[in-house]
Length: 296
Image 1 (cartoon, rainbow, N blue to C red):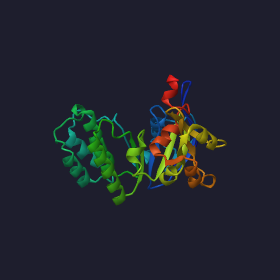
Image 2: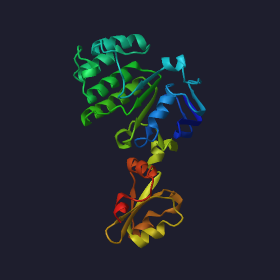
Image 3: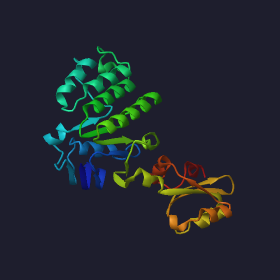
Image 4: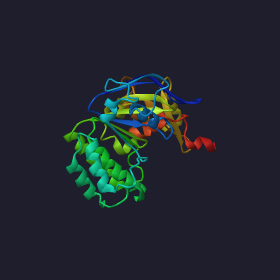
């Protein structure tokens, strides 16, 4: 569906994307994960054809997406900045959408509209931020475009609505598979939906792998500071944090052939798994230390 090679996008002297290379297969759900300002929106809007790359190549549906009618006709981009004509109420917007999207599912749109408690005569402009995001989500799901992009789609939603959105997305994807890209800075909320994770940091791709591989990417070790430090020699250390006076917690890249959990336990070192959300935080940290280091 998407092929990118050495993609770079600059704004004046600021490089928002730097030599980005990756591929996204058809009919998969990919999570684009990164901190605020990492380049997620710039990458997504370049995929959508809104931005022209400064250099490098990008192909969507085997075409350059910029000003491509083919890409525009097969893609929908959902974010919290969506605008609709003020003269149209919510019911009018849904009716108009039917004419824009050839795969539009009117039954799904109406059911979601009723479930989330919208009123036909409401104005999109007067909705709360969370309700706008919820309505935009209805458009994104019901359009059933071959390429569906959600850029931080749950902005303003409360926890219950976010949970409903993720559930609806998964159920509709199973019923009608398509390529979905879902950006977020909170991987723990969406990892069960995803097949792959694309982690971006400061405009560069940090990693691109399946969720199952990401869960095995690193391990945490905790124990006496000297004992733990001895285990870190020649290892790729992703994070370190002092605990109390003489204890240390460290996260290291996992190499199954180098570690015997039983031997570490005998030495008094605890081995733990690392959540994917914490791992992404560690991988995108500018420094390998913790906030405590600011006060040391």
